[in-house]
Length: 381
Image 1 (cartoon, rainbow, N blue to C red):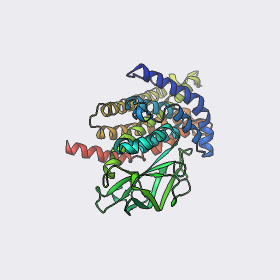
Image 2: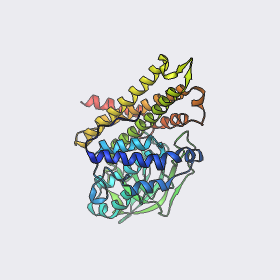
Image 3: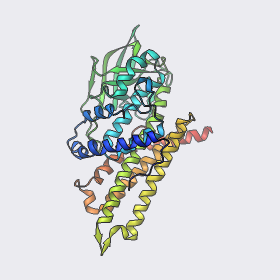
Image 4: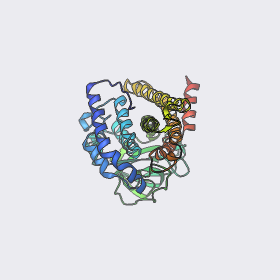
């Protein structure tokens, strides 16, 4: 059964309906083949941009829709239920645009945001490094001030849209201070000195390229510094809070898709003279799956509503990311179990859902990191 949504406005209901229509027509028919071919669907992002689905939480004056996060995340859910790679890509693009929208100068916003939010430009987020994934304060990528421009050198890892993005939101060290020595830059994807590793051979989300990004003395004008010098760590952490909600929404959408498929299969498959959903052992399994999906959605939306009200939501974002991605892993694994041997084959989508769910427990901060974040908040409160 599809998700039951309680939306704040008629406009939000229409937006969800539009998203569902586009996702059913343009995303669902392509997903399996594109994932099997590890093919990046750049044209889909242009389509979503034209439909206004890449700019939902951003101001109308720059081409956004000024939608609350509560609504934006449910749009992400609908996309993820059809094609997780696209939903993660939308979340990453939104997170890549966030530093400029939240911390950039008015001149930067007027010049750059309209193209970024329209989908004409696709973004990527460069924080992690090969030796510094969960510890961004240990980054060594440097940005040296040469007076009027910065010279960037170093390597970023695990970059979604690496080699495909039109702009890269990059965090680099401008002084030795662990947390106050990092600055944020917006780097054009065609800059000389920018190069990319081969796409990682991943378990899932194969339609979304993930690469190393190399900066070999890339010259970046000081007008592309986002926020003040040394503020990058705070900007990155702020962006991650919102990005974690995006991952939570993708996880909920993926889990909903797995639940829907498992329920539909269990109604049609007969064993011992009746549909297998009528066997208590399987019915209880499906009930636990449904409880996991709805609990994760409620946790995610509570964090989103706090964000929309201007309340602190960092702890709630980590809880939502933790709860939703763990739930997605359980639900997709159980969906494979419901289908039995068929669930283990690539003729059915649940094995792909299971592979895609795994990485959601890892990126935007592993779930072990989320527990650390939550624990630190509890210690301070």
